[in-house]
Every structure is written in structure tokens, then in C-alpha cells.
Amino acid sequence: MVKYKSRIADRILERKVLGKGAVLIEGPKWCGKTTTAKQMAKSVLNLGDSAVLNQSAQMIDLSPATLLEGDTPRLIDEWQALPPIWDSIRSEVDKRGMPSQFILTGSSVLPDADATIHSGTGRFAHVKMRTMSLYESGESTGAISLADLFEGKGFGVVRNDMEVEQLAFLICRGGWPWATLVPEGVALDQAFDYFDSVVNYDIQRVDKVKRSAERTKLLLRSYARNIAQQVSMATIRKDMLANDSSTLDENTVVDYIKALKKLYVIEDLPAWNPNIRSKAAIRTSDTRHFVDPSVGTAALGLGPKDLINDLQSFGLLFEDLVVRDLRVYAETLDGSLYHYRDSNGLECDAVLHRRNGSYALLEVKLGGEERIEDGAKNLKDLESKIDTERMPAPSFLAVVVGVGQYAYQRKDGVYVLPISCLKD
Image (cartoon, one colour):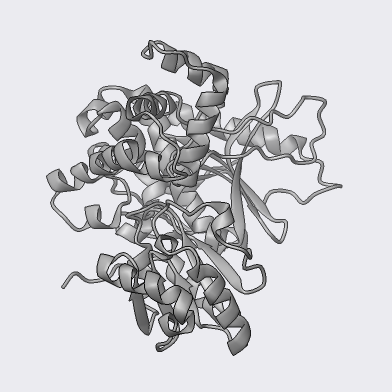
């Protein structure tokens, strides 16, 4: 039996279950939602089993409460296969009047909005799961805690043993739980299998709109070529048209992107809007990102050696990996991730902004002293423009790197943090 690897979502789920009658775990398929839920569930209704689903579909009108009987918390797996059960759960939560009753999981393909009557507000909590961060999969030592840095706790020099070849492999493998448990060759197949499933099946089922598999591939390839950049829909459309002989308008591109966001394949990074002592206009365009960097490498048909031979693509896809990890870590810090860019070209790759108002400014660089220096300068320039009379100063500044022998604090106060040393 495969040993369960602890997830950061375990802690979040435990807290949410104690506070609400039902908890819905959301996120891309294959990211481990069901496995995580089973660690806490005391009974299971598996609607992913066709026999169970057929029986439950007959029972939902006759006696829906029967489906919900069992030790609590009761896991309703693949709940979207039987949309009416949502309202049955909501009603049962009201009747019982107690927390910790149900955990719902499912594929990323959600039912139509009108398939349920009530939103579940006040009865349901939500937990967002993503693919594994490097700390969860065991490739980060976790020697440096972001929570500690927010609390002003520094650290001595920490050694980093991540080699460039391993980093390239981890970008292509991704954080799919099963991929972390199998031999490397098999592990690299998982992202390609995920990509094929999305373009050939899931894109058709997400909202029952017929879409082209080939056009979906073109869009994902365009996204991969423009990863970690603030490109417009018009730019993506133009890129797709170079390989799409049929008519393609911008509304069609928007429709495909919306569908891929519903599937949690695409997860763009929104813009941060701070109080700045500057007349420069703040750019509001999202930065293009996947939920996992391996989606991008699979879309382009790249392997680890290809990344090492193309350092520009390597750097951009590394930024995609860092954004994934920081988003996972931000969940336990009650935070969200943003980016910053203004009309003067000043930018910050990631801003981790917490609910309590504290925030950190982070630049992402693959490695190299010159690039670290550029990143630190950007951070210090942005820090100097923050209007600290209207908002707090940043808790810390950091350049997150992929390769480099050490984690340390520079003389200017900026941290240099290898991604393989970080945890929440």
C-alpha cells in the first residue's frame, strides 16, 4: 500500500471541517482531492462508481437522506455526477445543525450552475487544492519558512543542493501526486496524459459545449509560449491563427480560456494595486499561468533536456513553478498571490498579500548573480515607492531562485531563497 504524503491542504481541511456542516474541495483533477478527503472521512459515497451512481440516481428522488446516512464526516466523492445531491446535503446540514458532516470532492468538471438551487452560503466551506508543491512532494527541504519571515525571524546561511538537471525534471514532471511515486520515465508521462485528457475529453464535458481538441491544443501551446507574461487575448489569438486555418475571433479565444479555467487548467495571476508614491499607471492585465508548469511543457512537447537547452523557456516555466508553490503556501498564511507592473516598466513577479494586511515582494530568477542583482534592485525600487503613510511597508523582500548554492540575506536586506529550501 502506497504511503500517503501529507498535504498542506490537510491542515486547512481540518480547520474548515470544524467550522462548517459541509466542505467542498476544489481543484484540478489528479491533484489528490479524494485521497486527501479520505484521510479524514469516516464513511464514503463513491459516485464515481457507475453502479453506485445508478442506484443513487434512483434514490435521490425517493429518499435522498438515505444516501447521506453514515459516519461523519461522510465523503461524497464525484458529487457533480449527481447534481441534485448538493441541495440534499444543504438541507441535511440545516436539519442536523452541526459541523463536520460532509466532505465533497469531484473532478474539475462542475455541473451547470442551474443544476443546483442554493449556493450553499453559510453551510459550505471551500478548500482549494492544487498539485503538490516541492515541499509536499519532498523535493524542498523546508529549511526556510515563509511564516517565519513574515514574523521577522531570519535565518543563517542555508545550503541548497538542487541541481539544474533536477529542477528541469521537476518542472516537466509537475506536482501530480502519482508522478511523485513512480520511476522518472513513468512520472514524465503523467503530464502528457493529463494534457491529452483535457484536450480530448474534459474540454467537451465542462459545460456541454462542443469544442475542438485541435483548437484547445493551439490555445494551450500559445499559453505555454507566453507563460509568465502579461499578453493580451489579441496576442494569443494572433499566435493561434498562425496554425489555425479556420475563422477564429477573440470571443472564441475567451470562451476556450473560460472553459479551461473552469477545469482549473489555467490559473492567471491578477494584478496588485497598492498605494504608490508615483504617477506611473499600474497595469491591470493578468499574468498568464497554468495550475502546474508541467501543463506548459506537455503542451509544447518538452522534456528536461529541452529546457536546459533553452534557458529563456526554462526561466519562464520556472516562474510558473514558483507561482504554483507560493500559491500553495499562501493558503495556510491566509494570503493570495498577485503580480505588479506599472507604465514605467517597474515590476514584481509575485506579491504575497495576507488578509491581515502584511505582504512580501518577491522576484523570480532562475539563477546567476547578475539576475539576482537585477531582481533585488527591482524590489528595492518598488519598496521605495510604497506610500507607507497609507499602507504598511513590506514584511520582507526576496529573490526566489532555482539554482544557487545558498539561501542567505544580502547586505541590502533582500533575501535570496532557493525554491528547494522553502515551505509555508
